[in-house]
Amino acid sequence: MSNTPELPPAEHTETLATPPPAPVSQLHAEPESSLLKRIMTGNGLVSVLAVVLSLVVGAILIAFTDERVTSTASYFFSRPTDMISAVWTSVSEAYIALFQSSIINTSASSFSDAIYPLTETLTIATPLVLAGLGVALAFRVGLFNIGAQGQIILGAAFAGWVGFTLDLPVGIHLIVAVIAGIIGGALWGGIAGFLKARRGAHEVIVTIMLNYIAVYLLLYLLSTPAFQRPGSNNPLSEPVAESAAYPLMFGADFRLHYGFFVALAAVAFTWWLLNRSTTGFEMRAVGANPVAAKTAGINVGRAYLLAMLIAGGLAGLAGTAQILGTERSLSGGIAASFGFDAITVALLGRSSPIGTLFAGLLFGALRAGGVGMQANTGIPIDIVLVVQSFIVLFIAAPPLVRSIFRIGTAKPKNKKAAAPAATGGAA
Image (tube, rainbow, N blue to C red):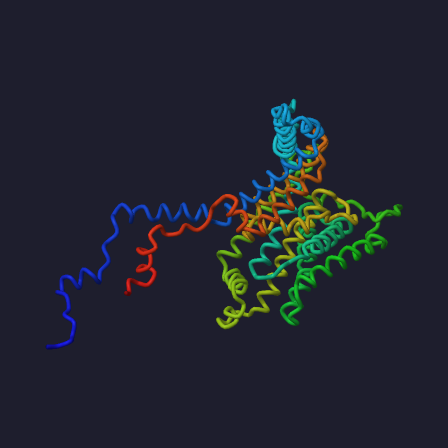
């Protein structure tokens, strides 16, 4: 008698080897559920929730710093509604003032006064978006560009010198000044890119040092006859000529200029470069894995250098928005803190051009509305800085945001049923 086990009939063998087909309703439901899962677990949702959490933290700080809340807290257990009402009043008044000072003033008596806060938001957002694009582009190539501040300063210095020194026809003067600003920022960013590509120097250290050099270089230039305003001992240059300035959109009563459309064009260019060009593909490949990109024949050093040149040029455009649009004269504070805020904008925008645009608009609204909030309600403007800081904190800790809102990758309900699918049906 043979010891070979008896095989089941052929029809049973076919049945055991072939898993049962999924129901038709389930097959049609998979794409929809997959799309919903991508939306609910994507990075964009985490960014939005990080902003929401930061506003909640800001509301808590506003309540704690309000005198009405602290006075009602002493008798909370006897009349809790007084404290709850005081908290609601303080927070709602602060955020309403923030909205009316950054988006639209609903209590204004004229249309121009109503839209003035929005124009201020767009004015402040313009250099934030441009500098944020420079930081975001470097992020996509695996570089941490901390030097946007210095690149803004050099871009403003180059554009400003062309603006108040050269005498060129209308139209041409503005174009030449803008190109000069791009060159100034690109050269300053290119130094870090060259040292990274040729010598392996860490871009964080190099760009931080270049920021300090740019600040003191500008102060030196403003003490020389070529830059300092005649008859003045202050570190201030002559105003740029009208032919070199960005035209104002709504007249002299508003600061918003056509540099905002330059920022929109820069967003479109950066998106095309990263997603539709061969150069952008090589940059993203280097950012994903420089070793694999080098093995595939991509010149990694060239990608680093080119990325920092373009990133610096975008930050230089932010400098032109300041000198040719908003300030019109060079000073030691021409770059303000836009270069450092641009890092937060790029992080919040997840290093994508469209995301950077919306993040820049949000931070422009916070900066424009913070002044009005302090003036109308007495809430310190530092609350806005705290909100921005918490946005960075939550952006840097996506697992914390996901755990608070209980979002994440869905797990299969039936682990036994999921196991054969994961192993290709092998027993």
